[in-house]
Image (tube, rainbow, N blue to C red):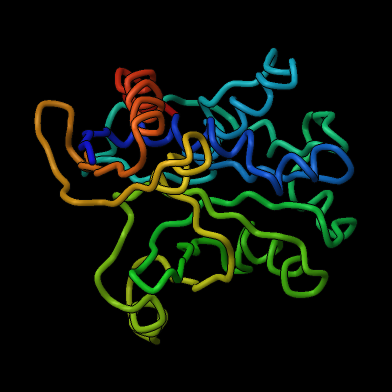
Length: 248
């Protein structure tokens, strides 16, 4: 077993690399539709997938989000307009399209990639809701529940929560509560731990977290496997360790 430290930005890059080779995503790229809903982590997913298919020109992670958490006071955030989600029909990027444009055409075998804001130890995820009609996850659930479209939720380990997500949602959604609402959603949670498994075959566990001097939100990950898997994981994690902070 060997331990590694990873910043949130490095984790986003790692997740992006792994999602580009995820079996369900690859199958939908070949003969279906993949919808990557705009979000900061999904910006890395889109970047990696478009790069792998030779379509990266014209895509920027800056502005590829509908909302984000910034420091109190707002921080120095780029002023950029969302150009659309990334919709890939049989591997071809349909520029300018959003999930709202294609949700009615999605079918079983297609994939929606949507970020989330929290997940608990039981493997339940939840999405913050700011839109009074449910936003992008509200649209996605029509296809996920109504037509068995696959929902994959790339999410960094810094978004883990201690309490049961359903209990948190009841509190956040109660009449009189303030702040965003919280919607528990069914789907495949995909973290840095899953990315390491997909890319190297090694298993990984979260063992500690925290940091300063730019490592705020960082996690310590313990990787288990045979010598070749540990070496592959070390090479992989070193390749993303200097990823600059996310500027979306």
